Length: 218
Image 1: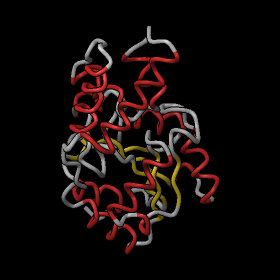
Image 2 (image 1 turned 90 degrees about the vertical axis):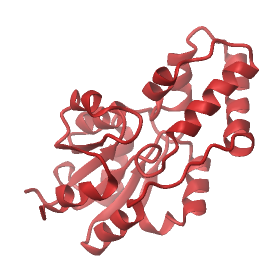
Image 3 (image 1 turned 120 degrees about the vertical axis):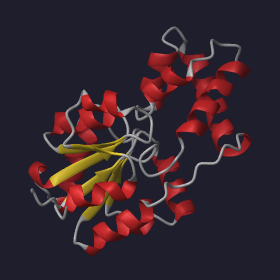
Image 4 (image 1 turned 60 degrees about the vertical axis):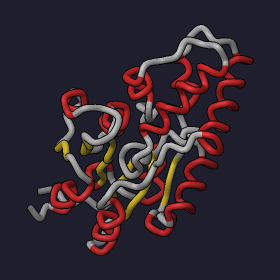
């Protein structure tokens, strides 16, 4: 089995159990602004996209002013008002530590903005685990490969020596567009059936289950 040098993780729904909070905050935002409330399925489908792209999908007729209001209300909901727990997944830190111990470089490619990623990295204590990261306000939104291409260049890793891990079809399609392998996780935004559409090398149901897939030690 191929030996990977770099493992790139999505954040929401992959390392952190935050899908429920994102759904709740997005629905409450629409309620507060007297807009159509999107379904849980619709919101799960946009997780991983940049906020601008997410609003394009969920509220395509909203004007610029309304979108700015939605972003402001959503941030207030997520950071202050909504109390839905969003812990890291069981086994996530053990996975990262094991990969670091086996010599893998680690990075993050996320639909979060830089301020949001920096905040959760500090809150979880995970900041020391990653050598690099790219966020949605620093590159084109998934599934465009810019985030991955920039990480590969920064860390001087060939595409065939990297692998992307994500819970969303957008993560896996981004990997495909960048010419790198991907692992889907079925415990986040999208089901295993949906993830299969992007042809990942594996789909796993827990963080630690991907360790033998990445290391080749089955």
